[in-house]
Amino acid sequence: MTGPHPPSGTGAWTVTVEADRRYYETVVAREGPDIAAVTFPDGYPRAEVALTGAEVRIGRRRVNGSTPPPQIDLAGPPLDPGVSHLHAVLLPLPDDDGWSVLDPGSTNGTTINYADDPIALDTVVPLRAGDRVHVGAFTTLVLGRV
Image (cartoon, rainbow, N blue to C red; front, side, top):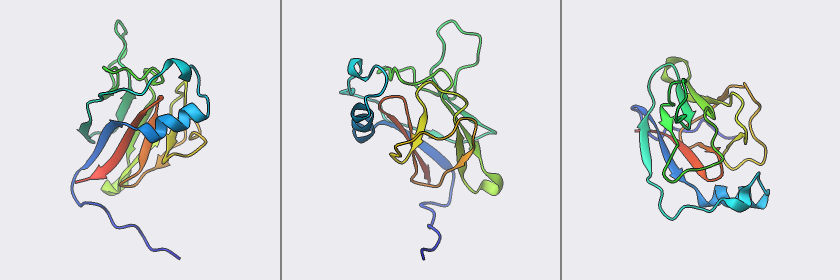
């Protein structure tokens, strides 16, 4: 029997966005859609984003679209072509007890912690500090608490 996992911090929640070679290699091994045309980026600016508000949308802004841009905009450069315009949504859990993720219908799915199968569409999945949310062909968002 295992006990509860201690939080990695006690302050604000953040997400770190990074290119993840291990995740990219799993997508290549599964022969994801159009993966032969995607290369792992040489340089990818790692970014840390504070999680605030009622939701945090993850995706790629539309160049001439009428929808508001996502709070975590993965339009690049470098562009991860597997990221949908609205790929996933982070939602706060009650009582500042963490965050959850929902895939509203992305083209290529959203996985957590290198799972083989994507999360079910329109299903809220609770996350905890240290969890890795994978979108696109190589982009990973790591949930943390500072």
